[in-house]
Length: 217
Image 1 (cartoon, rainbow, N blue to C red):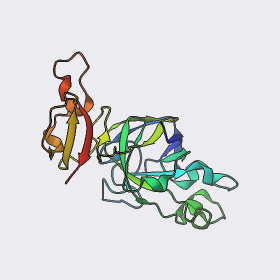
Image 2: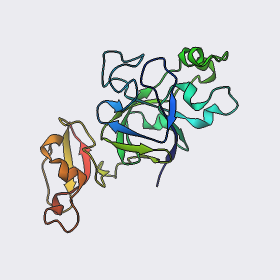
Image 3: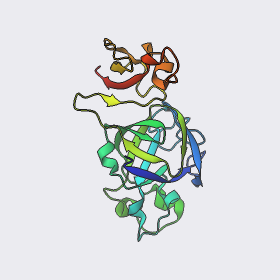
Image 4: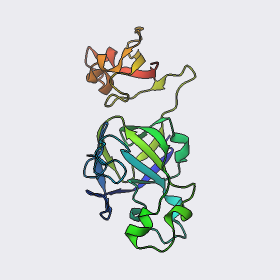
């Protein structure tokens, strides 16, 4: 069941430019959101460091009774009905795209200065700055998409319903395949993308579809 929803998507092509609210965006694994300044290492906090500080999220409820609009916060995703701090160090999906929560996003004064707002963004959003996350698998994200925490089973395995490989290529993973045949842990890249993305049920090789995984090294 979805834990939350994307209320708005905001990007800007260059550092310091006004963020625009858009209906959908393409998230590229290991890089960020195509069209956003952080995607190619041109953001204020990742200049020359592509892949660093890829995507930011913030809870939309904190904007109530403030002067700040969603785009003023300079975060990429505005969400509702999910506690973003619970996603630090955890894997989650936005629509069909998989992310890894990295760390808390400290609020600074830059949003106030760029938006021309007297109130201090740092003070108004103290302890409410949001989340920094990495894009694990690529895909299109749209306004209204569900934000869902990937919850491990009691055995530690994370259920998988198909999509781009959800972990780093060199991560050692234990997997469970549709056929039930036991497999020894290997590097994630040793499993073809088709096994992660899933073959159709009538494909003779659909038994190799990965239906659960766990990072073990």
